[in-house]
Amino acid sequence: MPTNVVMPQMGESVAEGTVVRWIKKVGDAVDRDEPLFEISTDKVDAEIPSPAAGVLLEIRAHEGETVPIDTVVAVLGDAGQQPQTAAPAAATPQPDGTAFTPATTDPGSETRGADVAGQPAAGPATEPAAEVAVEASVENATADRRRQKSSPLVRRIAAEHQVNIAQLEGSGISGRVTKHDILTYIDGRSQAPSAPASGHQGLHIPAFQPGEAVQVQPMSVMRRKIAEHMLYSRRTSAHVHSVFEVDFTRVAAVRQAHKAEFESAGVKLTYLAFIAKAIADALRAMPILNAAIDGDSVVYKKDINLGFAVALDWGLIVPVLHEADGKSLLGIARGIADVAARARAKQLKPEDVQGGTFTITNPGSFGTLFGMPIINQPQVAILAVGTIEKRVVVIDDMIAVRQRGYLTLGYDHRLVDGAVADEFMSKVKATIESWA
Figure 1: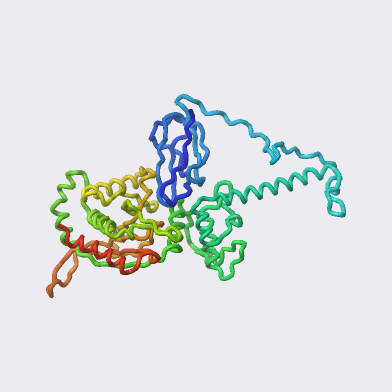
Figure 2: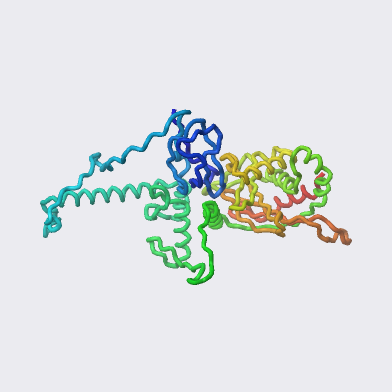
């Protein structure tokens, strides 16, 4: 029995995915859970496993093609089944179900298309002209319907910015308007002081001049999606940042004392695990930082699912550690290492990038003092971890050397007030500095 392979949803805000590479080709035998094809979204690059064992009978979405989630991209058959040879293309049916047959014209038919009153004239040329007009009308109506059937995310953005999707030219499959299409339109409209309704994209400043020594390469699918998501987040959330300096001296002592114990359990004990544990506890105490905004409503998430930004050579991925508040320090450390390793190996599953409620990014691993991160939609807060290093400080009027680092909380001021954000960070700071 044939099994349909669909484009998975790799994240709650992901409405489409791009097929980057087919690992198997038509006619190949496939085992269940064996990598079948590779996709790219704004959330993740991942190899998608086969949902069943059998033979790859058909590929419906080719490499480089972007399709909506749940679209059938391939068909699997039973073991030993052979792919069918493609049949010759049949005549395209017309709206009334009959095939279009061009009428025969004579040399003088061009002059008999219409009479002087503008009505159709008798003659062989009138029927094809009428049919072409009907066909064009049907095609236009179909194109409008396809644009209207864009993803829920695109329709929501259109509603928020009062954009008629039917007026946009879609670059997606069958003319669908993608998130990139509508964000590009909105961005161009906001840049142009008097942009007309036709979709003028506004001012464009060239990145280079003719004759300039440059190398131009197209953006990868993931990089384009990240760019779209970041612009959308900046437009959506009222970003504010608070920076706290935190003393990690006690954590450093605990880490040194238990490092060998954790390594024997097969995991490296890092500062990030301590920070994640402190964040999870603070989110349980202050659930407004674990919420989301849906129109005029606030959605409080019952589960605390921490996303961790993982830097890759080809982009950025945010895998999720689910129910982090219920895990021990060892469980959190092991979970972070697991999702990071599978992200780099392109082995993440759809559930690994879904359901995140709060994101932690760690630019300090590269030596960054502190960062001002962009919120990962639809969340309302994100934490950036700065480098943790020995610094000279004054304690009780005496100079001392302590392990210190900066933590930056980025939050959505539409929901989170400054006092609430600072109280949250005070809890995180107190937990870390008094770690037992």
